View 1 (cartoon, rainbow, N blue to C red):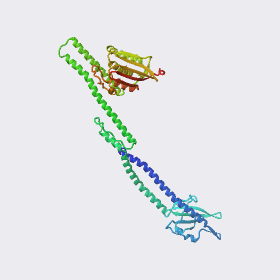
View 2: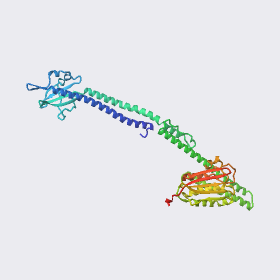
View 3: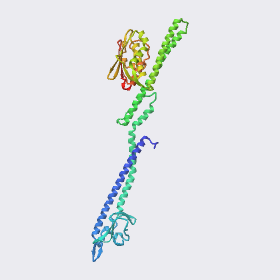
View 4: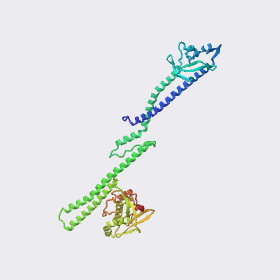
Length: 466
């Protein structure tokens, strides 16, 4: 069974069910025909019984069972067509009279059979239908009457019907099997397309797709689902290739700068001030490299869904103050005025580590890209059991065409040439990834030369959980 093809298994399962149904129908036909034939014969036997009972009479105290002319009728005298056998017995079961067509044979009285109930027996090896009844004359029992009819013609009809059904049954099953196999083959054609498509798909060839069936059935849904899966796999592999390429480039750049700087230093002796300047420059590049590696690891961890989210009560005011403290040096060096507008204490229900990471990336960007002596405003408010956080800077801004792209890894807007501002192009991508995981609404608006506004909408902490 397991070695059969899917098409043949469908046809076989179909034929088993259909075969049982056909067998039931054929059996019903046979038994209905048999019942009809026997009912007809039994009716004739009962008519004969009634007719013969009426012919009983007495003459001079002697019971006369049948006129001589009656015995001369063809059905009593011949066995050619529908022979009717008649036999009279006395109370001792001895034959008194019998129809001429019995000749030297006799009908056997069956003691175990009920009166007036037809039953099958045999005469000279041939099947007959027999009925036996008691005879009464003037309420006095005088003997028994046995009437039988040949079943030869009926048996031939039933035997022919049985033979016809037995021959037809396997032929019908065979025809149905090939029909079922043909239509099953057509029905599972999309499966064959899936198999063929799967064979040509490799890691270097993900463009092949399964042709969709014309009928929108389960196979259409299966084919469409697999095509969608292939689309996602292709996108994931393309993102992985792009990530690997971009990560290699981003890691190689600071390493190349550090190597070049050190090679310049060892070419000839230099004074301490120049050594100190170049070493500090290399230290800054190493810091940038460390930051890049940390963000790459964080991004890989989230891409693999290994980050466990632990939601708890988070004091948002304190988180923002801690992030500002981390950026104190940049704030002071740029003469930036940071304003925190938080009229009350705000608690949110979220993951503390991820919330800190989100705010650190956004606030660091606001400080890093702000113009000297400008203002960064952070405001908190409550609305419909949500905590609204707005972070507004008056920095260099982002071009409208780049607003969607900046959420992709390693992308940095080139609207303005600010190569002196170090960055990895991963900050906002990580923010978007984390806000999606935490189901935090994240929106960014910006305009070149005007500044950038970031909107975050958090779930408020439920006091009943305290």
